Length: 415
Image (cartoon, rainbow, N blue to C red; front, side, top):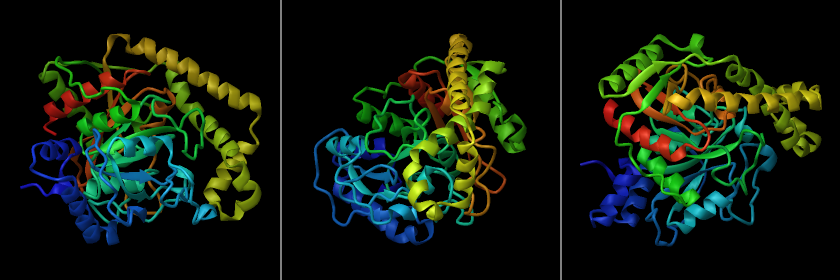
């Protein structure tokens, strides 16, 4: 029998509803798993001391991990930076408050890279402790994979949900930009930052995101989709096993009835990828103005270098980057008129060795800047036995449709 800590969120809720499991028993099972594996995984920055009171709601008492860039009124919120050591907000971020009111039980705060940008935290990959779990949502992805909690919050500016989900072998959903309100989040890039969720499968993400947005996102597609197969701007960076995974997945989906067409991105869309660093660093410079003015020495060298570069940027350059984003979004919407979803890689390959670097967002930054929903699904194992993911993308506002197709895809690939 599956250990309760390894259940998906939707399966755990099914068992709770059927009287086969209680929310308190699930909490204890997760605590036991944390005691067993946290000394190596190191997913948490802080943990809830006592079992939270049970609140009726659609999350049914499920434990939830909260990335440490989202404020919590009962746990420290340090944003991955020594500048904010011991900082205690007075209130929850909107998303955290909404999760609690829906019956979610916050089990702890999860490790983020510095301001969800650069310097890596201590978290290791649950599938191989010498490898990165990805970032910036390191602790959330690793915690779901390790069975510390079935649901978790992430945020994404470039690839901070999709890449760790792929590296850790879980599902990670980045909704359309702005779908989940960012009140109480330490925002870095106004044009890019998006709150998203992790679960073991797409249905978990649909459940959690639906609760947070007061929408029903749980529907499963009943017919085969029209799929655009696209290597994206990172084509030259993909490992052989990732290329093979994309081709094999496309073949299996086609055999199941999907219409698969190889798609080449137009220049207006590719230009968005080139503009991403300009907008991201230009806006992060503004977001960290106080930290730079008063605590520059406590910021990582690499982050300061990036922001020094952004400081030389003119206002017109940043405005042009945002205009490039807008043009690319319009072009992508036109491009997807004859397709339901786009299939691409979640990451170049398996999680890299080492903990000082969380990998590159080269497979994700473009889609983040296009503002549409994206999801990573666990799809295979690579040569080193580490997870490999696939990424599904849709235009802005197609969140419910994407999640429905994602569940269809999981069924076809056997997940």
